[in-house]
Image 1 (cartoon, rainbow over the protein chains, first blue to last red):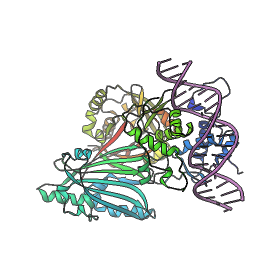
Image 2 (cartoon, chains in turn red, yellow, orange, cyan; image 1 turned 30 degrees about the vertical axis):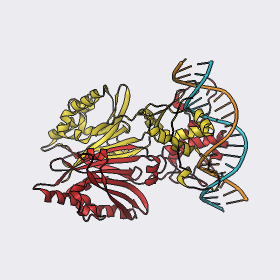
Image 3 (cartoon, chains in turn orange, cyan, green, yellow; image 1 turned 60 degrees about the vertical axis):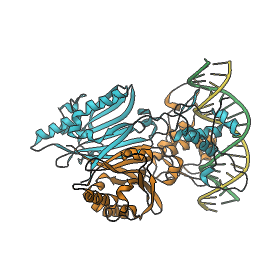
Image 4 (cartoon, rainbow over the protein chains, first blue to last red; image 1 turned 180 degrees about the vertical axis):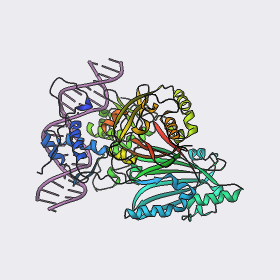
Length: 273
Length: 273
DNA sequence: AAGTGGTCTAGACCACTAC
DNA sequence: TAGTGGTCTAGACCACTTT
């Protein structure tokens, strides 16, 4: 047995008193105990075992396990079978800066990204899959096209050290991009948006990539999403739905990006006028 | 007994085969069963009771309860004691458009917001608390001020029909705003940013509110946060950390906004050059 | 080999909802 | 009053990690 210093909790189930009789010390109370304790500990600290906690607080092991389960769902713990439960490391969040989409930003994207990644001692990897498909109804609607249009689909997994950080799936009208570098795995310097700008400029005078619109939502991941992003317990998923439009406000690309929310923060700059 | 039509699942615990012997039908398998079923049902559909599920699948009630618990954590169900578990309603998300911060956007904010709210048959309410405090260290840093600076703190709860939708806590250097409408509950037409613009313009030639920067992160809420926003199970919290700066890039306000992620979507427009 | 979490059983009592 | 979820007990076996 080791020495654990834990705070004394005064909370009760659901925060509402119900009985006049003796109150039970339930798993929520134990969770409150442990939450306060966990917050005061450095990352990596191991919790007492479930059996320890049960004995110490005079409950069954299941009750102790449930208390720990609550903290897991809150994203406070990492639990390893055979090993124990540990205070989770809060990792620094990689900034995803919207300015990267501007002309100036695009030119320096590779350098900035490399700098950030290198700074963290990481090695970025991108895995690309390309397909030509009929546009799914929602994608067609976002592209303001009829549902029977064919699109180029670029599915990318961006990660470091073999671990995924985000998924990006991009849809472009095939009529617009077929035969260009956008259909290749390596889209060249500046990436898809640089190519898209060139294509639009060649198509008509004044043609250009003019505007991006991003919609940010978040939710808990489905099991397959959690697996694809290797999300730990209690970590939500961020979804960015992006639309790129030309100078006439016609959409030319839609992209869905799924991010591990414990790895990224999104940064936007908004001029006041 | 009612008639439930459920799909046949083929998954196994953790998705990895381990035994050569007969496989157990565990709570994860049952959850997979139920997840497929739930996704095919309209919102509000009631699940079989835990006791029903246990009998039907030949497991204990705890196993059935655990399966349902998984789906709850994924945000798929609403569960009411004494009543049952129901397929959760996916509510339409209120767009929070970054353009509302621009000069043009501010002028029409009230009208747009009213229109949106009215459209949904809702009645918006704002509850304001105001305090004058020493700036917390992180706030002082974000304002690029020393820690012993005094700030005006505006704490707001925005909701409809008595239910909170988001919390906003805003910090402004007291030296800048003391005596202005920003210190009152009603900041007047255009709100805090309109007043801030006037203050900056009056302070020196060319003075103005020039830039906003927003940082978006998300995580599971702590219990007190979940209570304050009345978050249902399996619903993450969105945090927007905003900094408003003047024409010299000096921060004049920082604001933390906490959003119920099942009520909002964030919308940003980004020019391509 | 010892300890840890993962999972399960069979039963129990409570609080709450609906009829 | 019957049915539902909330919670608990006491014990068990398994898979996995650590020593």
